[in-house]
Amino acid sequence: MRYLRSTEGAAPLARYSPGVEIAAGDRLVICSGQLGVAADGSVPDSVREQTLLCLENAEAVLSTAGLDRSHVVKLTAYVTDRAGLPDYMAARDAFFHGRQEPPASTLLIVSGFSRPEFRVEVEVIAAAGSVKKDP
Image 1 (cartoon, rainbow, N blue to C red):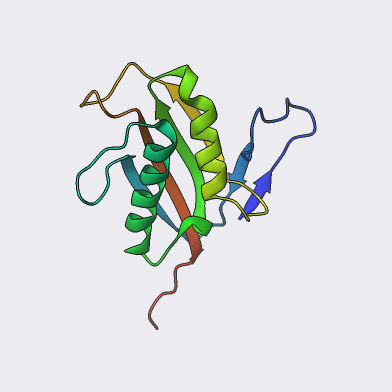
Image 2 (tube, rainbow, N blue to C red):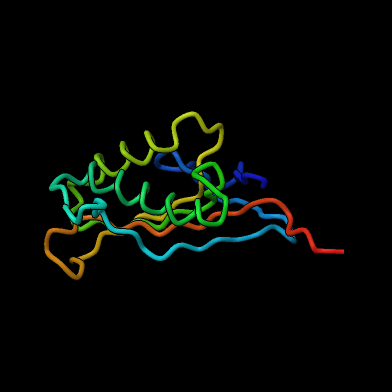
């Protein structure tokens, strides 16, 4: 992957990459939106805790393809209240702490989800090395 930053455009407003180039032949894994629901079905109240659960749930999906958070190239997050943005960004940054380059990211404010206790949903796109074909 190659992380893209233009010297001509505006700098990112938070810790995310403006773009990521994926080589031809790399595998892509696209996760549906993940909600902040724990394995026992509980839903924490805070945006920060829900965000961490969203990302952990996405990583669980990625693991079925042999990938993890290091393979994430793009996030799309939906948050129900602008006041929750700092907690969302803190949780996202903590989840990806240690990565030299953060994934590309889009963040939207939405009016709500299927259940009122949901405050965050996160979609993830991940990429991994070239697909090897059997001889």
